[in-house]
Length: 295
Image (cartoon, rainbow, N blue to C red; front, side, top):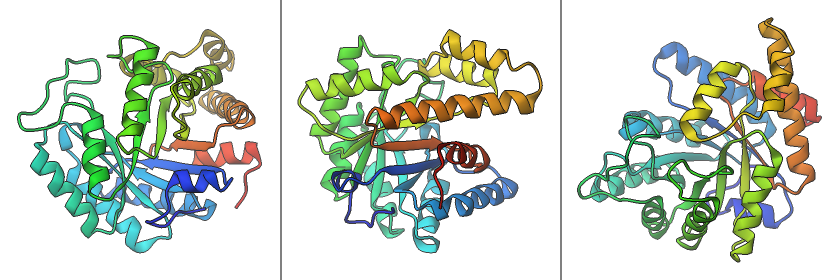
């Protein structure tokens, strides 16, 4: 069920409703935009809690992110959540971007420190006059009336000293005004539940949505995982590779694995599922079919 501007994900989950949400990214050309809107229209009947639109490294997609979230707000029944990062912006510029979201009718923001333009493993250097940590961006957006989501890392952020230190950061973001978190992709349910346990042990009950990325191309997922600190377990690799080399068979194996992970997460008490769609609806719809989730 979609939330209105005044109703947060915390409210929704508190009412006992399960959340489903989808992430998109700003397309590079007209064909990509057509594909994006085809995916949005295909997934809209499932009444997601929200749909999020990413924000390119260093603000490279700022205008497109603002435009797409604004169009979603105007032309659909969906609740758009715009990503925003600290990278490459002064505090004043960030305030201006938040004002742009308000003008477009967008009231939900995913507040992220963001990765350096050189990649997630590069050394972080704050922008002069800008913000140094995601918690500062959470405080800024929350103070301006936004409903704020943040990122969470089941296997720890690549720069975190330990899993406990990483949990401390998420707790700080919650106490600064974040109302929910969405995790990075992962492939072991125990990694997600371990993160939840660490946060709950610190006295914070922020809802944490597991982020789901089906493995449709093993090599691509492994490359991405190396960058962001997500491992692909040996048993998962074995099941994908045992499917052979036929792309359709590999894809089917990846969908089955994702559906099994979703089942385990929901059975274990996860408040919902957040799907990294890559601007396509087919894989998500196939997972929904396997989970018997219908319109």
